[in-house]
Image 1 (tube, rainbow, N blue to C red):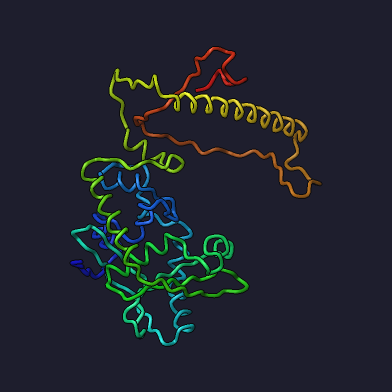
Image 2: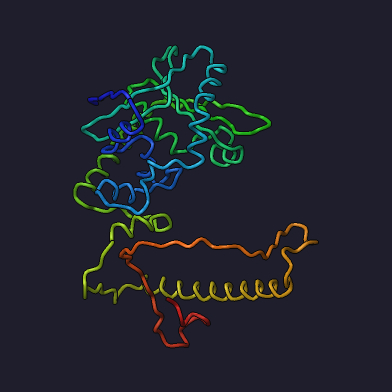
Length: 323
């Protein structure tokens, strides 16, 4: 692999040089296991130049990512204490294969191991996540394996390792789990990345994750063609999901109405009281407050509306005003 090594001079420069590539941190999206819900369809749309109303996932930093950045130096220090034969070096370069449009920014390098150079991927997790996703160190989540193997390939490292800082105010600890090189898995990563870029080049959309891809679907289909219809006369699946949606909407409406009844009853009972006392486990207040005024600029929004025009006997009760 013709690897290019680019020194990182600033966050802005780093984001710019990695923008045309699939990076190690997003490869899990191509395998439908990204830890921060980045999907293949969203990644596809970004590289097709589609504009989103929100910032690109990789440019945002949620509290979990920020925590990881803060704890990264401490995790490396803990690894050096646990593995004194290793010398840990902060990685300060971006590695990429321009032909494959694949890149990686390792967290750290490992020196002093007889096998040769290693890459160290640092993670910080709550005890609950350590138990649920890592099974207390007996399993390495697939997204961590993918990221580490991609970094090892691009840096030509002999092996990889994950250092997991267990975030616990009473018992901080670090677990070190080695991730050996895996030629078959690495070949699969390269093939999947190649297929992704083929999709981008020829405009072949990957299958959406309908639970996560609302923004990507809207961004990829921003406008309609006037008077164009899609004939789904023989599509029984769409009939079934429309009926299912109507039933769910009727249930939601009934639940909302009951919630409103309960809230109105509480308002009536409270009168001019500011809060309810004597209810352990509940905090109920009824206070006045000012709402800040604001204006929203005009913009075109494509809206999906569904009206149930089936005969009344085929509709769920309460579902006849579905919009």
